[in-house]
Image 1 (cartoon, helix red, strand yellow):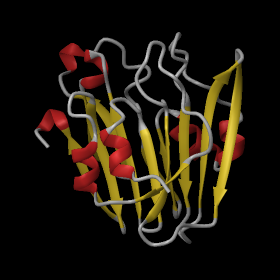
Image 2 (cartoon, rainbow, N blue to C red; image 1 turned 135 degrees about the vertical axis):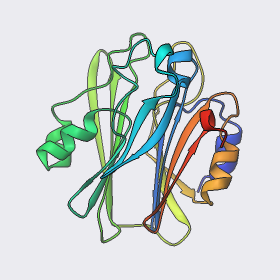
Image 3 (cartoon, helix red, strand yellow; image 1 turned 45 degrees about the horizontal axis):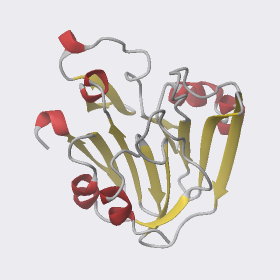
Length: 210
């Protein structure tokens, strides 16, 4: 099992990440460019969306403005892009993601990571990433997690040029409290964190002084 806080403290740029456990879901975004860092999370009726903190500095909204979290009946969809809406519209996790691929942000070709969390504690994870010029679609199904444990997947292995895509299976981690996760993220690169603990949502936004 991976020590999650140590993993975050020693990894300056995992990019965007999803952690799912028995009673909580975390989603964070990081950024290196001004455009990526110029964001906040805000609440919506069915989840959250990203917004430009300073609209005058928004240069390209295509890959940074989206709904990371949306409810679908009793399920919760969590993703790093507009595939959230694709999953909601299809109503089927795998079928929806079979129509999507990695992001077109050459040379990084950022993977699309997604989770579908069910009311009974089971959940599914997916990563769509570029391998050999083609899209590799990986799906993982979990019956649930023990108390205090979880599973984590991110877009990148760490910093680099180009950024190296996440590799291997999702990590088994311990799941600390939201405040500790926020504090462990790299101070220069972190942007926002969504935390849902037993149905109670808390948002952290660097641009709002959190």
